[in-house]
Amino acid sequence: MGLSFEDMVVGTTTEVGKHTFTREEIVEFAEKFDPQPFHVDEAAAAASPFLGLVASGWHTCSVMMGMLVRNALKGSTSMGSPGIDDIRWLKPVRVGDTITMLNSVLDKRVSESKPDRGIVSTVWQGVNQHGETVITVRSKGLFGLRNPGTTP
Image (cartoon, rainbow, N blue to C red; front, side, top):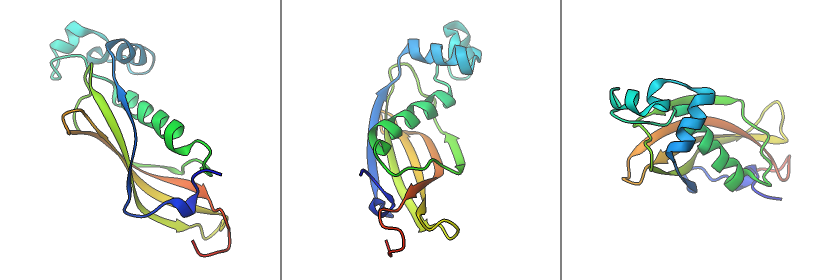
């Protein structure tokens, strides 16, 4: 069995993965899901407040979610999430940017109504190659307990 509730340690931060955004994937994602001009058209993007093509914030979130699932949650006792509390797009993600995803455990508790699982509060942080935080996401995840009924 992979990662479970008991393995989550409050105060720890883990590097989950890195991803480099290409022009092609920025445009492809945006054409399907967020076709604003500064995501799909280089001339329009150059004339925008961004002064160039930028990834959709939803694209950045999707990439981070993919890294989290493939690199941290695969084989875990993850039961999904009751939701995201907060998303902040702090700086634009540009063509060629490499984002490193970090995940920090803020808090955790065993569910009162379903004691076979716990609720883990985390913050994801995406940091570009210049050390700038470009995105933060606060969320909760549900994880099965390895040994329900014992004190984790």
